[in-house]
Length: 93
Image (cartoon, rainbow, N blue to C red; front, side, top):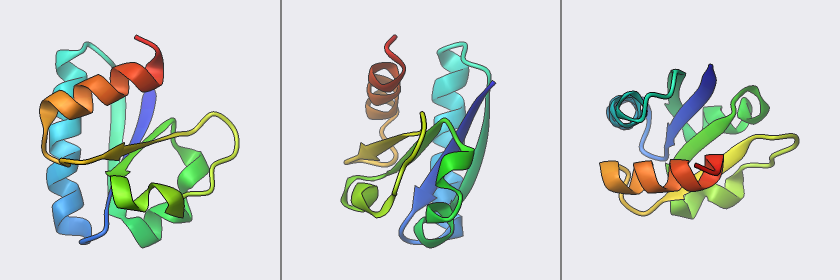
């Protein structure tokens, strides 16, 4: 099961909305996942507990990744097409 984190610079409320978009897209892609959400500040401390982290593009550099975790920068956090395309790219699908 894919472990995913939705992180937003604006806080928990907006990251919850992004989380729901990610869940919908991954369900449509038939990818089993467990999606969590957090603010960018909190997410930075949990980076290596997830397979994928989706965050606004300006925040990608905030994450120090070791191991196989992939950080995906999104221009439009609510775009299902962008989420789908970037997840496919990150997973090599």
